[in-house]
Image 1 (cartoon, rainbow, N blue to C red):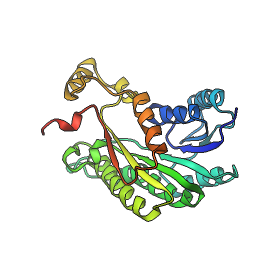
Image 2 (image 1 turned 60 degrees about the vertical axis):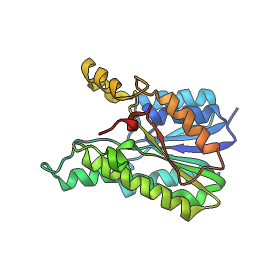
Image 3 (image 1 turned 30 degrees about the vertical axis):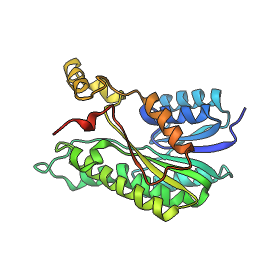
Image 4 (image 1 turned 90 degrees about the vertical axis):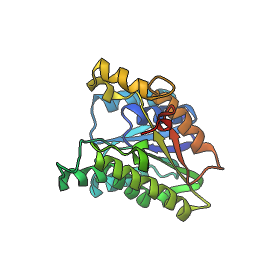
Length: 246
């Protein structure tokens, strides 16, 4: 049965974005997912979504560019129904530091980690139903005490996204709620590039002693999307990682 509500999830062919898209489909949403390109991975996710909620689809668009944001917005508008939930999850992490400062790298990090969310929100908020929700997937690295020196641009962009979340919540109240999830150590594809020792060291940093699963993040995300009492919140889901000193 086709979902009666419409959800849009960016950066949704793997990891947290994919998990949120599937969780929304299970909750009765038709889901539009996005990634930069259409490939076997996006086709596979669309099949998974379609089995849960026919009418779900993928839109290829590079949200690190104004043209890509416009392409996705036009595709969503073409569906002809209002949006119930917009999840801004698109992002990536590149090494950036002061000694190796690069304008192009910093702009790239802000384009995909901040402007993709701000730009798509500005473009689509008028299409969101009263009582609808915008959820920005940020990071604990956007908190002042948790930015990392080796990924300074990413940390700064997520800090900007956190600020945007709270001000957008004020601007769009009372009709639309805007919140941000700040995940910590999550078991996504970047673990494939890590050594077993690195993984073990990282796990020791979290009081729960393990990585959070994307499904755990997704379950919390859907709960926040549906909770009419929550707006302007920066919601840390990190297994206690930010409790650590230093």
